[in-house]
Image (cartoon, rainbow, N blue to C red):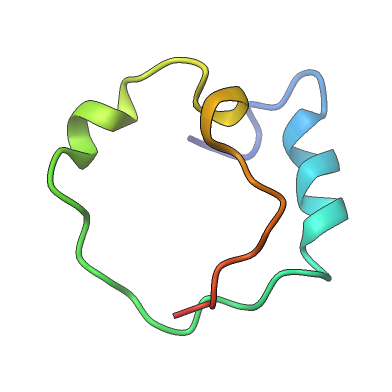
Amino acid sequence: MPDTDDADGKWVELNSKYAGEWPNITEKKDPLDGADDFAQEKGKLDKYFSPKPGDGA
């Protein structure tokens, strides 16, 4: 989704908070099986978000 689709500023706020804390992504991986189906799921931020960063790989 485009970053311009952020009427309430939720994504800018989330990015501002975590961009300095989380590691940079250093490696591109293939999408997981079912990624296209998951892309259509509603409420993913509330359901799956964790403030704990991954390893960046």
